[in-house]
Each structure stands twice: as structure tokens, then as C-alpha cells.
Amino acid sequence: MRHEPAASGSDDSGLASVTCVHMRPPELALDAEAATESAVHGRLIFLLATPGSGAERLLRALGTLPGAAAMPVPTHIFERGVHWILEHWEGPRQGGPGLSGLTDVQSVLLETRLLADAPYEAFLRRTGAERVIEYSPGHISVADEVAGLYPDACLVQVVRDGRQVAARLSSPPNESSPREAAKRWVDDQRLVLSLKHPNLSDLRVEDLLRDPVQLLTAVAPVLGFEVDEDAIARAAAAVGIAPAWPAVNTGRAGAVVEIVGADLLHHFEYEMNTARLPQRVAAWGDMAISANVGVGQKVGAAVAERLARRVRKVRGALSR
Amino acid sequence: MTEAPCGSPFDGRVIFVLGSRRTGTTWLQELLVAHPAIVGVPPVEVEPGSIDPREPVIMGALEEFWRNAHDAEGEGVPAYLEGDEIIAVMRRFCDSLFTRARDAYKPGAVWFVEKSPSNTKRLPLITSVYRDAWFISVVRDGRDAVRSLMDTPMAPLTVSEAAAEWVTALDDLQRYRHLFRRFRQVRYEAMLQDPVGAAVDLFEWLGLECSDEILSAVEERSKREVARYGVTGPIGTGKWMQLPAHERAKIVDIAGDWLAELGYIDLGSS
Image (cartoon, rainbow over all chains, first blue to last red; front, side):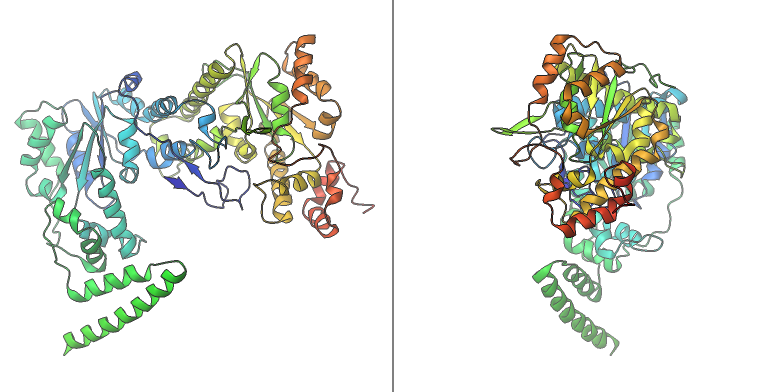
């Protein structure tokens, strides 16, 4: 993974106008034995969810379990901390700027892990809890780093129907376009599904809302909690009342998800092909117009124009 | 306040070499590590005869964590850690990596020298985490620095950009000068004239011994050409005169104030 820091001053060449490319380490997996040096070894539960998925409900619920504490606000420690450190592993050329000049990959991973531990360690100390549950909305986008640095943690992928998530992320006050919102959900889920982590599980938020007792009864032991019915009842109550979500409200963003993330919807057993024809046509147009370079842009514009004409035709036909 | 923010294996024994690119910072680091007590990340021979610096950019790596630590919206790291705890966490991170580098490159050393050109952009961060550090700024005639930079593979597109980079580094150093507890400025031109003398001055300032053996090591190091990036020809000052007149004028246009301030030009007579 490579990044090109913005010209605003993040570049490490010391010159804003020069594009400076850095790279993450070739391997992201902290040695499991080394991870035992951590003061929070085996005590963390990370919820991985695209924003707008309702992970906060599970966070609240798990936080009521005996010995557990839910962190009240996100740490953002990965997307605003760890990720940037790892991206400074190596420069673009041999011997170029980077942490690789200081030591080996495993040492950098371990020291980064110990740095990331700090807010969790402080929270555990303050609350006296045995386990801590955290949800930062940006963590799922760097889930490979979470999994790599925390082989001893439990990771829970919290999934909500991508069409609804994308629709929400592309509605005010959020600023994403339908295509960007859909891409965010799809990329996030694919990244988590690609992980090889010993303690990774997933659940659908719709199932949590439909029957919290049943779902929490199944999830708690997977996360290492020994709980009785009272504890589950308290946790289920913390989930809150299910909102009146529309069955499947797609819109253009949802239609894009159906096109580019059909396999994911299928994987998570969501009902398919709910987008109406005009929405699907508009979604294709969206994707075509998003082509952003050279010939691709021209082709994209031409395709979008043709699709727009089709949309007008379809709309005309529908109105008649 | 010159003590480390937490227990540190390098308490009061980290040196930051600061300066714009092509001002001699790599060379100064080379002179410093000639001392047996000082270690830094050594340059690497990328191809026969071509030795490039290897900058750790550790402070650049911590930049986002630093931003996180200053979250004003009640989220992020400061929701769980006090300011001094955050600084201590960052210090331990850096110290641990410096220790590993020390153990790999020069196990007997007790000082660490860090040199990354972008450090001048992160002075509040650096001086918070290493308030006990020693800061050495290298200053070179901006016209020579620009000309030299334009000869490298990392050259910016225009002479104007290179000049602006040199100015920005000096602006940053001036703006945050009050944050340095231990600060020394050295001139590249003086180093070139007497590298051993320059090194001895710095060793004495740092409180380090200077035996004949160490002086010989410095002298030997001073002859080693580093960070040439394929440029051949003699090292020297005043090579900016080879630049076309319009480029020289551009540099003075952008960097004139600093060139005059540092005594490289006389704006009154020009």
C-alpha cells in the first residue's frame, strides 16, 4: 500500500511540491509471542464497521457484560496514528527515508503496538475492567493493520446491509457521493473478509436488532465471556429499540452496491436485486462518469451521456 | 526544563541536526558520529561510490498521532491520556527505536543523532518529545543550497521552489527558536574550511571528550563524500555563480531577506 501525502506539508522530502511515496512494511503480522509483551494482551475487542452500520449498539451491549467496559469515544488510534507510522516504513528508493533504517519490521510492529496500547491501557486502569471494547469508525478501513498488530485481540465485523449504509453515507450531512459511499462499504467488507485472524467473527446488525438476546447469547462465549441470562438481558436492553429501517432502501448508492458488491450482499445473505431499473441505470452512469483520467474520462463521459439519454427514455416510458 | 519527559536511556543525549536540504546536514552527522559515544543511522552505499543518507523520518511517522493527540472534539487519544502521558508514550516509542538502532550500529554509543530534512517542519512535536535534546542548525548560503538541490534527483521543478524551501526551513527555525533549550547554529562554509575545528567546538559544547584518536577519526570522516547523488566535481562554496543570471535573480527575489540577514548578500548595495 502506498500513499502520496498531500502537498500541504506532509511530505518527508522536506519539500511540499515533491511527491514523496512511502510504503508500509512487507509484512504486517506482529509475532504472536512478541505480542505477549503488551500490557493489554488478550484484553481487547475491536468492532470493525463502516460508519452508519449501527456498531454503537453492539458496543453499548458488550460494555454491560461482566468485566467489560466500552470505550465511550473513539480513539481513532489506527487511522490517525498507527497507519501513518506504518506508512513510514520505507521510502521509494533503496536507502531512502523511512523507519527501516532504524530497525527490523518486527521491532517496528512491536513498538507501534505498544504505542497504540496506551489509551486502552489507561482506560482499563481507570475503569478496573478486564476487557475493553472499542469502536472507531475509521478502523475498518485499516483492518489489516488492526489484525496485524493485535493477533491476541477479538475482532468483530459488524455488517449492515451495504445499500442502506451507502445511502446513509451519501445523504446529508455526509458528503460522500453515492459511488464513493458504495465503494467505502464494499472496500471495507472485502478488506475484513481477506483477513486471516484467529479471533475474527462477524454478525449482521439486523440480526442484533431483530433478536438481541439470541444473538448476544451466541456472540458472548465466542468473545470469551461467561455470562448468565441476566447479563444477556441487560446487554440486550442496551442494544435499544430497533429503528423503523426500510426493508431495503437503495437509491442510487444502493444500486451501486448491488452492482459492485453483489457477492458481498450474497455472502452476508441479504436480499438481492431490489434496485429499480432507473436507479440501476443511474448507478451505471455514476460509475462510468467517475472514470477520471484521459481516454477513460472521455469514454466515461460518452457512456454517461448515452446512459443519461436512456434514463430520460426510461423515465418517459414510465411516466406514460 | 531540560530533563526528559519520562525515564529515558537517552536522557539529555539526543542531538537533532536541523537544516534545509543540501545545507550539509548529512555531512555534519557524519562528523558527529565519528565520536565513539555518538550513533546515528549510517548512510548507505546505494551503488559503488555513491553514499546516500538514510533518514529515519521518525517524527514524520508520528505526525498523525500528534494530530490525534490534539483532537479538540473530545475524541481520540486525549480522551484517555493526559498531555504529559501522551508525550511520554511518544518518547518511549522513539527511544525504543533509537535503542534498537544503537544496538545494531554502535552498541557502545550513549548519544543518538537524528537527522531528517523534514524535521524543521515538526519543531513543536520534536521539542515536546525531546525537550532535553541538543539542536544543531546548519546554515548554508541559500544560493548554493538551491543550486546543489537542483542538481539532485529530488530536485523540485523550479529554482523558485527550491529557494522557497530554503526560506521556509529558516522561517520555521526562527518561529520556534524559543522552544530550544540547547541550540547551536553552524555555518556550512565554516565547516568546510575547518571540519575538525567545527566538530571539536560541538563536542565541547556537548560535553564530550576530544582525544587525538577522536580528532583523527573526525578528520578521516570529513574526507568521505556523502549525499552527492551522482554529482561529481569538487565540493565547495560559491558555485551558485554558475547559475544563469535570471535564476540567481529569482533566488534573491525569494530568499533575499534571509540571505541578507545571514550576511551572504548586502541588499543595500545590490
